[in-house]
Amino acid sequence: MSIVHLPANTSIEKAHEILKRDGCVVIDGLMPTETIAAISSEMAPWLEAAASCDDEFDGHQTRRVGTLVGRSPSSHDIILNPTVLGIADQALAHATNYQLHCTQIVSVGSGSQPQPIHRDQWAFDMFPFPQGFDSTFATMWALTDFTEANGATRVVPGSHVDEDLKQFALEDSLPAEMTAGSVLLYTGSLYHGAGPNSTDRDRIGLIVHYSLGWLRQEENQYLGCPAEVLEVLPEKMLRLMGYARGAYSLGFVDGGTDSMSAVRPDLVEGGGEVVSLEDVKATLA
Figure (tube, rainbow, N blue to C red):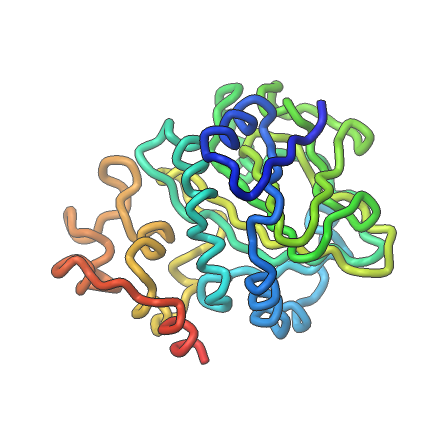
């Protein structure tokens, strides 16, 4: 089974159809070149200051930097991309709602070894979700070209319906090769992992993961975003970050009060106003 590539103007229904069948799909050229440049520039100081990870799973030659909502205003359009959220709406439709789970810039350095093939939803204490059940929906955006040689994310198409705790070798997987600006979508139950980088340049990707609203987020969106940024974010982003109820009654404040009231009471009382990306950039400047 190969990895299906779809054009940027693909329909949400078509992309979800492939995702449901294969557990993964690539949409080519969905991120504009100017957005690639903006995110790369905004995150460059953070990435340059980051140390390599200290364990085999995260990668000894790999650097990871998170909390993009507060650090990279240009990433907001990617996090809220309507095509991706439209697919997420379908992929996670078995829950009342979903939330922003994790945001990271991942730089797989020269000499990196292959990451162990795994499922993202093992993060939930290795809980044995029912076979075929997805707790997360993941996107890996290419900020540089992804090739087999430089460590493109490797996937096992069709493995999202396999039994849990299955073991896969590198040769059982395929590299999700794609040009900068393309995005790999995959389910929480798909077996995958970063490939080895045998080149002399870093392979850089942007992870944006979404999870069911009744699960704890991998990245703490509440502590990771400065108060001054929370004050200017649009309601859609804040709700996605978790300032909303999960399922029927999870996450309220003081006996049923909307959690939004703790950070942005204006959005609870008056419905709020649309905040532009320029306003956010001005706040972060």
